[in-house]
Image (cartoon, rainbow, N blue to C red; front, side, top):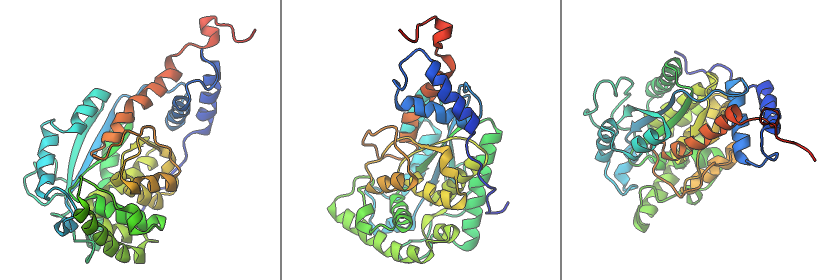
Length: 348
């Protein structure tokens, strides 16, 4: 498989117009459901049919990986937590498992670059390496590794869509992963390090300063290659974020809607839009993370978040919290009665 992506076609304009017209006929004042109406129109356009069909298989794929820069003290947790959390996902004990079960989605975990050999073979089929280079002083990946990670993201998206997934979420798990994510966001939005440094897992002031220094040094290296998305991923991302970027791009190629999560998937989304221009039309922002860099992502991609709940967990949690809204928006269009069906008067 090539690291090139097929052209992205936009959501269906005819279905979009039909959805707008149908909303005008439903038993409610025009526009009274606000953004739920806009969201339903987007779902309809993505599916290419009006009224839209209910989602049959919403799917969360959590991409896990460790980051060498964690050794610089940029996180409140040690790197071994990444592998431990993979085990927690597999036994259903993580937040994303609970949220997904509540919202009607299923969860898959992929070990792309966890610094451990403990994950079972089904999870490690696409594993590129153990950990990544410390991006403040070296590349995250080699040329071969970045291409392997891109191909993995493409293949995972294809497998999910071919398996019946009709709505996708990319989750992340990796101690220290907001540091490379922040470097990518700063590089692609032209921001300074201080504008993108957040508290991540809850670091103190000294940790924040260490993280700011690591982002500053990583950004010096990233800016040299910021116009080349594959080189930027190689230099900065690690295999997990690289695979997320390819997954998001390929989902758009396959005409499959995506709910974006927070700062890590947001960083990957910025690169995905570079890899496959127009991909952003297939995404909706589930929430706004409290990580400052995430607002830069949303502004850059011109996406308005559905929720603002002060979340910063990752895992796909903010996206899945918004999934019921996306589901409701489609069902309103499909199941509400029209004025004619209900015999409701539309004018004096």
